[in-house]
Image 1 (tube, rainbow, N blue to C red):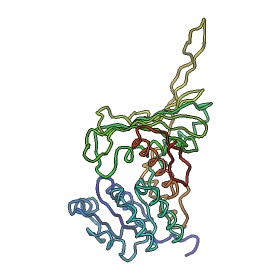
Image 2: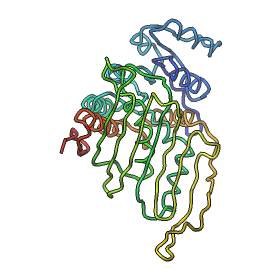
Image 3: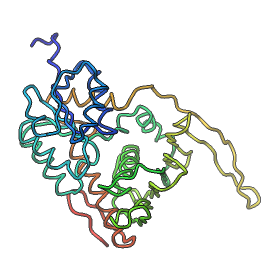
Image 4: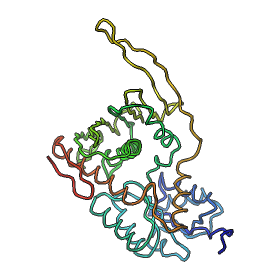
Length: 347
């Protein structure tokens, strides 16, 4: 192939065709650098819906994921299955020399994530995790605006709604990763200490928390307070980062979803008076983040290079944070120290 020739489309097997899997199917089907060779789901109903989404598709459809990834022409696998199944699917694909894009979280334990990352390196395969917000132009614009906040003071986030309620992981494993990804990206660092409490009203027999409150401490001393819930009809997806010169607000449900709120307090006769308050909407490019994820993954596969944005090792780091928060919940809010590459430690 000369430098002017286009590489062959990457053959894709999509595993999991549920609520999120069909979005992957749609995006890869629309991407000229990809070819969907196989799709698999244990539900015949989901397979039928996928065929309706792609009426011209003539590739392999099956309820058996192992036969799907064994199809000739498959070079990469997209894993969109329950989190507890990720490790088996990832490692089986990697052992076959296939590249892998997996939904978050990469696995449900730090030990499994580490093994998967090490296997990808040995096999010289791409292992990438779909942390979609890292590919969202709004979040990228927010990261560029962080220096305008001055000295950073604290952060806060709320992600709440009524379902969908999962039965394989608790609310923290389902929702927290989004806010952790965004805040870590904006700060350029990961928390070193976590404390959390959880409550489970919806599935007490499963011991799965549907509401969690957490406090995270970062290396600079900045603290973040976060709240995640499946059982709150007040739907919110909001994250704020507060500095000495203003507050950066990402409100996913608002029309102006990225705002820099300015203002300061002056003193007069022992009174604090708010001054210079104004709100600046930050303009962003209108792109579908999932399409950006697809493009980036396909580029990584064609170049056989690990992702510089959302590699497996970054997924491992996030799983370690989630394990630390889980450990704190299990010990009624105990402080858990995070030293990356090692298991969380209660202090």
